[in-house]
Amino acid sequence: MKNIGQFLRDTWRLFAWLINFIKTTILSLFKGLFDQVKSKAYIEKFNALEAQVIHQVHENLPAEPKKFWGAHHKKVLRIAYIVIISMMVVNFAKCVYKPSRVVIEPVVEGELIYFKGVTKPLNGIKSSELMAGGVQNLVLPGRLVWNEEKTAKIYSPFAGRVESVEVQLGETVKKGQSLAYIQSPEFGVAQSDARKAQAAAILAKSTLSRAKELYAHGIISKKEFEQIESDTAQVIAEFDRASARIKALGASYNSINQKFPLNTPTEGVVVEKNIYPGRELNSDLSNVPLLTITDPNNMWAVLEASEVDLGRFEVGAEVTIYNNTLPNEKLTGKIIQIADFIDPVTRTLKVRVEVPNQNKKLRAEMFVQADIPVTNLEGIIVPARGVFLIGDQHFVFVELDVNKYERHEVKVGKRFADKVEILEGLKQDQKVVTEGNLYLQEILRSSVRAQKGKVESSPARLLDDVYQGITH
Image (cartoon, rainbow, N blue to C red):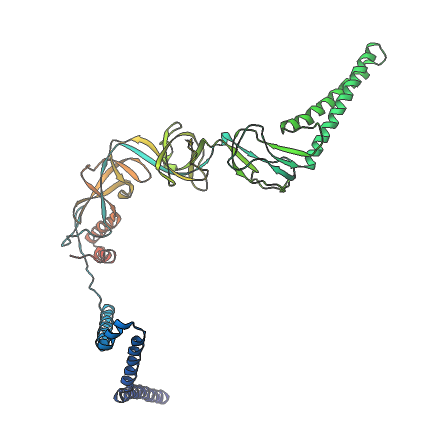
């Protein structure tokens, strides 16, 4: 106990010393500041600085402003001081002032909610007018691609070096036209094989002709003749194979020049070119084509539809295409194919649309937007965000007056990406809450819980946080 008492007395002495030290330090600081003010050192420094400013301004002004400054510079500086001090006072007042927060108590009567005493619409709760049924459009994003049925991607079947390129981007080519020439030892081997097979076929035919005569005169046996006939058929088949390969590539084996012509299998326009003289072509090249030939008068638009859109349109339906680069032009296309599966990554359904491009303003990989008329509705159309589900029932909040809302149960019909058809529970002249409806539902839930004796936070606190700045 003696040790504890001594500890407490020492602690009290330390605390008293600390208080005395702080008091002495503060008094010394104020005394020093008072002495500085009393000696007028700050005033002299300020006057010197002011005189320097007056002198600098006076030296750099033209004649007429200099005359005005020389006569009235003291008044101008006093006005500037007053403005600076006023701005400092106003900014300080803004920092200190904290406006009072308005707490709005909602009133709940059954399914009805209103905010008593508020005459202006609350921020965060918005309503929209309803629209009667009619033809609704499904809006789908997509991109343009070349028509694959009229597009040829040209690759080289042989490795080698590009000797020359005969076409340029945008040039129109005909079927079978040579686009480039490639010096290829591999092609030279194919030419050599064809020439060898040709020579062997000629020799085999001559041997077969002599064997027929010998067999007719009984000089050789039937077995020997049949063997010669079989060998000749094999040699001719090998020649047909080697020559067919060369002809299929649009080349010739009459002379072994190792010069392979890269020909186009279709007519069209050169829209992609990844080849140039001197380029080495290897067997390990990527899948990028050397040249792409297509008919740009017809393109495809690949649209992406969600799973819920499945069954709302069919092949043959007309589609209106929009593009940001051509805002004033509407293109009409037709659905030619709907994918049979959902993309596992994007969870979308690919829809292919044929789009005319007679003026050639469209380009591949352009982003587009498509409007597809899906159905003729007879109910009332409501934005999808205005409808919410409780259990297995659908509800909306109807705006009866300014800041006065009532919950209605509705029966929904067909659904779209951003709209819902309402079959029962609404009238066309009503307005439905599209923003803030879940908040209103929370007010009803809190009211029901309060009536059941459960202690919950007041919805007014939520309103206080969400709807700041509301004026009466």
